[in-house]
Image (tube, rainbow over all chains, first blue to last red; front, side, top):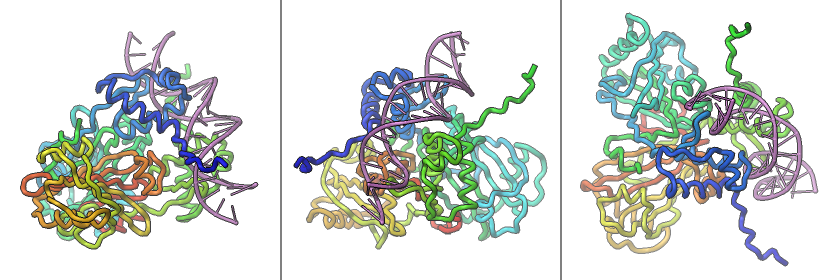
Length: 243
Length: 243
DNA sequence: GAGTGGTCTAGACCACTCC
DNA sequence: GAGTGGTCTAGACCACTCG
């Protein structure tokens, strides 16, 4: 009757194509090399451009490719390991590090952050924006929220004021911190800073800093998911997983 | 001359649509509720179905929606916090936990894992597969690699043998562990276990266990990125970030 | 079998980068 | 201006779930 056939589930074209391309990347292309354009690739593999793009998106999601409008698709280097847990004193901005303070203002935190800061009377927070660079690339943006009551009066304005807020934090004794990581889509402003398109996949790291028994700061950092591998705990040789 | 206009960058339709839908989700829908089907939604907002789907994909990426073929699109509950750092003794499988051993065999590790196990003579590893359930849902799969030389002879077969491998590990003194987190696409076998489609976004957690100065085990865990928020360090109240 | 989301097509136009 | 990736359309068919 013909129903005996296993009827192997037909693998979607884009999935098969992804596998084929992935192998081609391993064998025929070097890091940084540009691929043929999407129209040519689609023709070469006999699929519609949209289907090819689905395969490319997968590969980009895995960090194998990098696509830039107006330029082309290039073979991405292995993701860089980015340590998210090595601020020496525990506090952000303690040492010379990869973060640069971009701005600092006073504003109400978003609801999700306010919940984490519920220990404190509701009110304006120092909102400190930082950008992290690694190997010449902006890999993360962060917004740090510190309730006004924690630091007291802080002089100055702009980035300089940000340094003062950090200094005020450093004078507190840190009880501990905890983190969470989840997948997100880059908001328009973050995307611009990270040189990505809005909606690009990002890893959102939320850190809560606890001192004197209460949450005194909350950081929400947005890492490029295509180029970064977040590492925790300094044992891992950053280059081991690469290549 | 007309060039004075700011020429506001036209926001892509799907991006705007995503915003609109996101607000609708907040105000007009309850968790678990099913949305109208894609064809109706597309018609309602006056866009092609592909464009609507782009918006839905974004929302799914952010954990706001859950789509299931043949069923429909439902409003997802807030992501659950899943602790990835609380095996009591440090070793995997130490306590009654959410992991269930599925299988255990002897095989050569993939190249990426072999690099992390370079301390040991190349050879077969115990390959232990586990599945993690949380709130009745499979949220992660893990493959644990333990070089054969670390445990010596291990009796039994299948899941029981897996328990023996874990026990052998527990007899060692753990120096430490480190982890990395990166974005990935679910392989076909993982996708099946997680009740997702191949290629779904996942968070890949690589853990290296160090004892006696060498890496004695490597775990590669694959978490559903749509439903999980990975937490590190037990301070964070799992429910605080929710809702 | 009806209804859902998933895949795929063949085209069009737009925004961007670089020459 | 030429060439790239990004957006969008209007349709078709497939795989899956459920009654």
